[in-house]
Image (cartoon, rainbow, N blue to C red; front, side):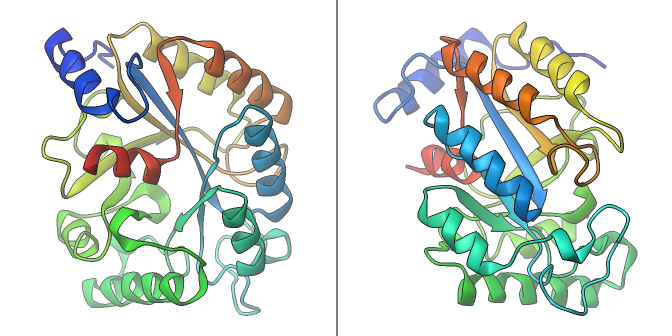
Length: 263
């Protein structure tokens, strides 16, 4: 995999001008740790770790994960350890970011397109009705399994500001380019599993820091043994401690980064 940055020095300078007046005058490396599914215990702990360093966590939750009928992929996301919208509203009230991660965690590329679109609409409708402060103008729809098609992406982008999908579907490098103009935004994410992903994260982030810059979105799930490719709380704590001390790095949730690019 070619890890050489695709952002030129000129592009980075332009980024500094566009974002510098808002919040990030000297940052060149933007990191989003994108936590999926909605593991109640893990997400509260992830939030606490982020808060200790003055950061906002990036959470993406299944709209129906708390329904008694939810039974998708019970090995990796048993319903009894998933939270509900009371939890998500509490975390949102603390400043963390809660974004849609599908209606029922289907791989939408494996079902009829009409069903896939219905699934998207039901998910987004539920978020608009049940998540306090949800704003579609800055929302990111996170495809389950990071699986999408151009048709489904464009359908989503009629209702949200950005979509997150598999980076391997449309680019051959890990970091995302900064969009210009920042409309119809497609974010490529990368992840590792099903085993612990501490070593994977460290390798990816160290490689990213050797480039000229960009926006790296890493897809995570729970802590300890929760979810596919879990991360260790101690590793996450140490990682964030290092990143907030790094002069070139900003750790941001995806929606906040989208908002920065639009403003």
